[in-house]
Length: 157
Image (cartoon, rainbow, N blue to C red; front, top):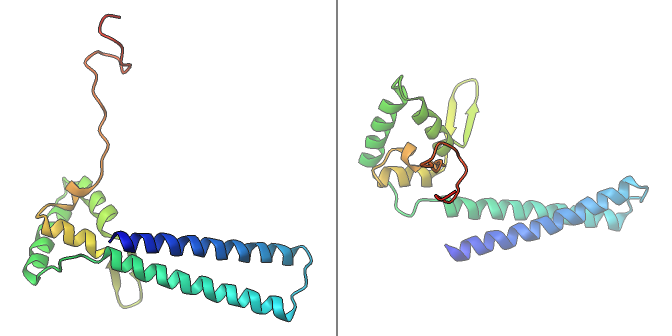
């Protein structure tokens, strides 16, 4: 997994460099540089290289996000029943927000269907850990002070 992350980082760096080169060329074109045959072919080459890097990075990110252990049908159904029960509960808006943040990455609406997708890794980790998605959401807690103010001071002050 570390090799995969290093590969993604290296490809992202290379993509940024290619994008910078393209931006520089576009800037020169807007300042009056004429688009000749060799320059045009160089721009096309850089655009193709950038597009290939984007596809490679996306493929590696999908591989990174793929759950290491696939869920059985029973696990999926159990998780679906549990999540549906909590999503439909009127007194639990926090769970609905947490579920959306963690489990839903894209909503596609067409004339015939609505498709909601999200990272398989989040679903797998929540279902395999037998925990609700809400428990997996990162939160920040305030540090409570024993005195009535929020400033931490030595006790003898």
